[in-house]
Every structure is written in structure tokens, then in C-alpha cells.
Image (tube, rainbow, N blue to C red):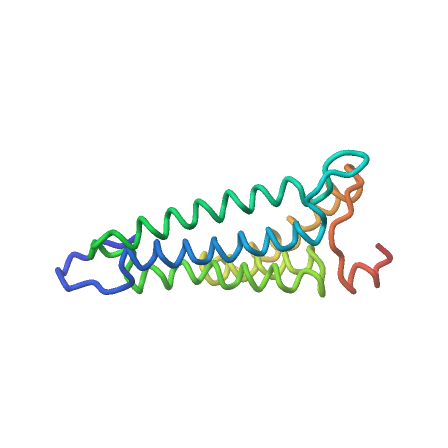
Length: 167
């Protein structure tokens, strides 16, 4: 990201802490997949495997891999820095708005959420002018609408604005 040319001590989470954290998060995700798979059915039905059959075993594989990573990370004594706080802020500047984008799609629809996210990123991270932002932030969702909804006939999540427009 940025070079520390002043020689100042950098601070942030260590590599070991990051690996332990990722292993725990992935294990929790695996448990969620396993639970959902069991709810959907992991057995064999009259027509073949039930809906949760394959995801169940993928969840088991993720859980095992997470356990292996956790054990390996616990055995390390590395004091190596994973990332400094400035680098993590840069990552969070992308991750947090993207998470908000995903969270609001069910309420405002994919197209409006995309317009807002694109405009936000272009202004905040790219510092583009409003004319360019308007052209891209409006144009890309419109192109996506035409391609997916009209040409491919694949409905994507729509919000109240699209319903108001009759789509």
C-alpha cells in the first residue's frame, strides 16, 4: 500500500492474530452452512440427493480446513505484522460500503443500490466530477437492467422505484 520511509514503528494486528481470526470466522460460516444443509435435508430421497447433501459436505470440508488453520496458527510464534492500521482503514473503506450495499438490496433493489454504491465510490475513492459520476452511476445500472431483465430475461431484485415505474 504505502511505504514507510520515515522508519517509524508500524502497529497493527499480527499475522498470527489475523490467521486465528479468519479460521474462527470460517469455522462459524461452515457451521452455518452445515446447519442450513441439515435443515434442507442431507439424505438421499427418491429422486436422488436432497438439497442440503452437497452443501453439507462442503461445510464439513470448510470446518476441517478451518480447524487445521487454527491449530497451525496457534503453533506459530511469529510477531510479523499482518497490516498496519492505515492499510486496514483503506480495506474497510471498501468493505463497509459494500456490506451496506448488500444489506440494502432487499429494500431498495439492486439497481438503485448499485447507483448509490458506484456514485459513492467514484466520489469518495476516485474524486471524480459529478458529471462523470452521474453518467457512470446511472448508465451502468441501466445497462445491467437491459442486459439481464430484457435480453436474458433474468429478474434481479427490484425495489419500490422499479415497482413505481411498472417493472
